[in-house]
Amino acid sequence: MLSRVADTIYWLARYMDRTQAMLQVIRTHYQASQDSPSEFSWRSLLYSYGGSLTLEEVGAMERDTPRVLERIILDKDNPTSAYNSVLQARENARAVQDHITQEVWHCLNSFYHAIREGEIPEQIRFGDPLSGIDALMRHGLVFIGAVQNTMPRDESYGYLNLGKLLERALQTTDTLRVQWLNVAAQPLPEREVPQLRYLVHSMSGQELYLKTYRGNFNPDSVLQFVLHNAYFTHSLHSCLNRLSWYFERLKSDSLPESHQKLEFLIGRLANQVKYTDASARNPQQLNEFLLDTRKELLNIAVALGKNYLGKS
Image (cartoon, rainbow, N blue to C red; front, top):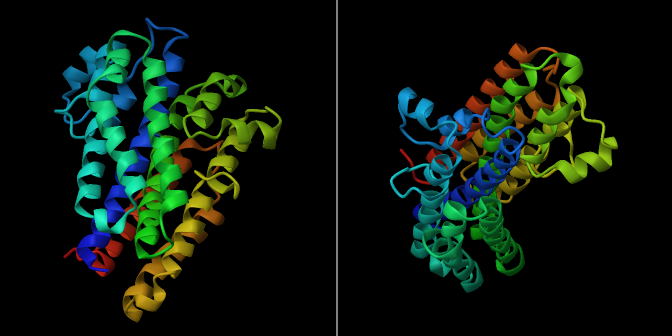
C-alpha cells in the first residue's frame, strides 16, 4: 500500500474515534451540568475542544451551555469541533474510496450530513441537546459496525485500527488527566460521587465498571480500571495491547529497522503502563505519569508517520 493511502486511512480512523470520544465526554458533562446549571463550568472542555479561544472568551462562555455546545460540536469555524472532525474524516474517506467498503463510505457520509444541517443540529441548538448528541453518537456506532462487519482484514483494516487505537489511548490519557483534577479537588471521603461516576461514564465504561466492582466507586478502583482492565476497550492496557497486535501484522511488509523502532516504542510504553506505581493517593505523581504517557504516545505517532506513512 502507498504510504499516502495508509496515512489517509490512518487519519480517517483517528478523526472518527476522536469524534466519538468527544461526544461521549460532552454528553457526560451536559448531564453533570443539570445538577447545578448556574454553577457548572465548561472551562476544561473549552480548553480541550474550543479551538483558539482567549482566556477572556473562555471566561465569558464557560457557563453558557448553548454557546458551548455550538462551539465544540457544530461550529464550522472551530477546527477542533466535532463537525470539523467528521468533515476531515469524510474528506479522507473520499480520497481512499477504493480502499474502504461502500458501507463504510455511506455511513460516514450520512454522519457528515447529519451533523452539518437538519434536525440534529436544530435539536442541539433549540431542543433537547442530549437527544441530539445521542443521535450523533448512533451515527458513530453505525460507522464502527460497518468497519467491523464489512471491511476485509487487509492492510486498510490494519491502518484503520492503528489510527483508532492510538487516538483512543490519547483520549483516555487526556480525559483521565483533566477529569482527575476534579476528583483530586474533593476531600477523600467525598470522592465517590459524582466525579468518579462521571469520569467512568465519559469513557463509556460505566456498565463494565459496575459489573466488575459492584458499584463501589472509589479512586483506587477507578484508576485501576482505566489504566489496567484488560476487558475495558478504552483502558490504556487494552489499547496498547491491541495496538501492538495490529502493528505486528505489518511486520512482513516492513523494513526490519522500521519495525524494530516501533516495536520498541510500543513495548516500552506498554511496560511503563503495566508496572507504573502511579497512585490515586498522589495526584501530582499521577499527573506526571499521564503527561509522560501522552508524550510517549505522540512519539509513537511520529515514528509511525516517519517509518510507515511517508512523513518527513
